Length: 86
Image 1: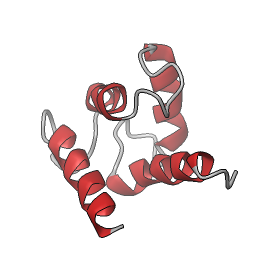
Image 2 (image 1 turned 90 degrees about the vertical axis):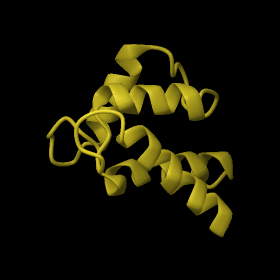
Image 3 (image 1 turned 135 degrees about the horizontal axis):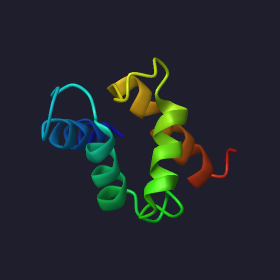
């Protein structure tokens, strides 16, 4: 599990570092991360409207960016669904 967590953190940092703040994901960074790293777990990942809705649902403070904590919600939901827990 440690390797999985390390991978998730490093991928978040890799994509977050492309533009703006290096500690948050912009909408474009989030879209690139999801389409590249989660193309089968996020349905219709290539659809910009789907990504916009998903990001809005995760963006708790409505600042247009995702912190790691906000992003982690998605990972938890996807893991629960993948494991048959939800």
